[in-house]
Length: 488
Image (tube, rainbow, N blue to C red; front, top):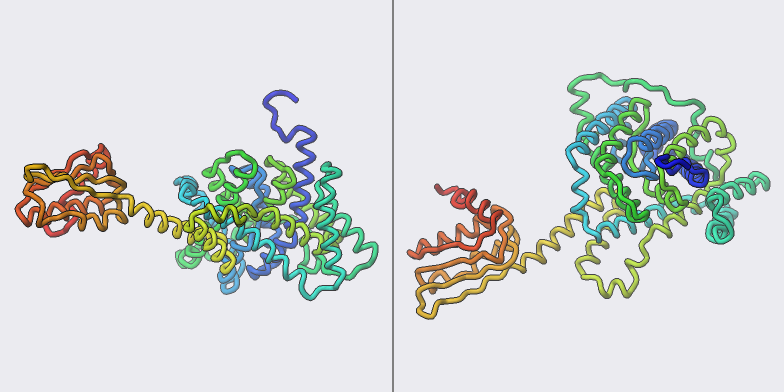
């Protein structure tokens, strides 16, 4: 292997990537059909979206080995529009949403990920695992009894086979074995074909069938904004999760822009749009995939399986795919986070944020909403915690002519609210010094609080000097002091 050549050109790596992509492609088919049904469109719309999203993001995305395709979250966003106005408006929304994602990516929206607390990330992962498992439950209700031993056999194969060999991914062997068994034995069990008709040809590019007017733009814009935000949220969270699992870094800005490009292309090919698929990404990563080849392969093989091997793929028992996803959910859940030893050591606020994130995601079935609510809860808890870190202590000169108040800590809207009440305006001498050497002013609320302190002393004929400001604090105080009361 010559230096500088891509890693995926190595035969051993390419084999792992291609086989993993095949497993992902098989798992994508029933999910894409299900999401199409949620969105109220033909199954081919979801399958085409999964094909174009995976192929484009493999080239344009910032996180290798991550799978993007049609997703439930996106389906829920666009379903009302598709139901009330038709496929043309859905496609137009996908294109506009992709353009918004490109713009947000270029503006650096990915940097907001730094404000997502670790407890939210853990809650996100655990909620994801629960949702993946819950999505399999309907496939185990009101089904022939033989489905249950089939699922158990598939799980046993995937657990124990890797101990013997890892040349071929265990999920692929499990799917092939159960398909051969059900066909050979003539078992009447739910299959992929029961979920919908597979397409028989490739998608054709074209413009959305809508009137290109301001009214159309006004109609689809709110849906497009929601589409863009939900898609980016899930994609960036998934990219961060894969970073942690693989001990590698990825460009979140490129991923944001890449998601937009993929959705624009998907829209022009008549797809329903999408974002990162967490379950399929976990399958890919757990099978050892680490490069863009697996993502590209998953997209290409998805269409090959539908168009060339449609009749055979339609006979794959859902029990095999359910078993794959159950194992993914078990492997995804962070069991260490709920271990008694961990819970005893973890601050109550951190546990609360994790639980709230999980609860909101499970109730709403929307990972993006859970992350937003969890992050806001974490910020509130953090603000309450640091609000008590600002301390005020007074030292009066022996002669009683001056008092020095030493303020320590971070001054911002939460901690500065009770700052005004920490001074003895009536009892202090005429010369008051406020020493901020060990403090930092972060916002206008703190400047307003200091102005209020000065005003209260001035009303009693006393003078106040503020000393010890560091450069940023002094700059903010000089700019805002006296400008915030509105009484001038």
